Length: 179
Image (cartoon, rainbow, N blue to C red; front, side, top):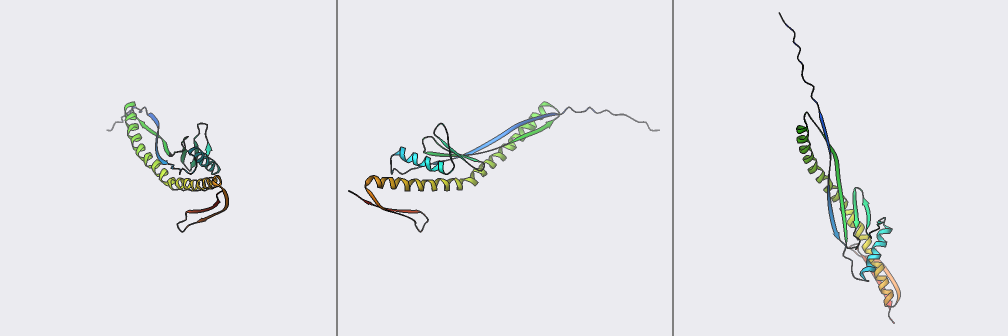
């Protein structure tokens, strides 16, 4: 003869735990302006050029622009450009007790941190070429303007010839009549 048995299993009380994990990476570039004009004039020319290229002026004197997911800032003194990339995500785990949920959360957060660090570095690396090219183009225009102003201060400018060399760099010839 068989007999039926009823087995009752306790229903687990699930503990859901969530945290936000973020990682960032940064790249600092020195802006070495040639001393064609005074440092203040050179910095002002650079700021004007960057403003024309879509950079935003901030109240503290810095300038900012986004290159995709990378934010770039020109320091208030105009000597350093810092690019920052940030990656973040929500980590959610579930456990049958508070201790189990916290242990799972710690493991999941650590795993996510290394993944997010790589993602931030990849974003920064992907944007670095465009950032450097934009700065280089702005600096070339600043140097042309500064040389033209310097030549005008020396005497009467008779002619200005701007061209490109074999290496793609700007070649500027300014003929000045000195009194």
